[in-house]
Image (cartoon, rainbow, N blue to C red):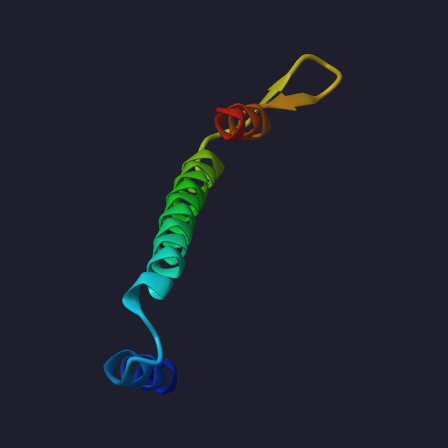
Length: 80
């Protein structure tokens, strides 16, 4: 990244590039950065939920051996 920033500063200092030309790109990059940080928070929350759910016990109901617990809780938490 250092190799990219030096030519940009050089271009600004020499007048080959105007700050007004960079402003839209900087705004786009900041918006993308914000969106990526939101996605990161969502991934962390889902990972945390999965870890908590994996620690929950599962229960077998009836003679047909239907197991509920972790699967139901995981599906419910990820749907929220």
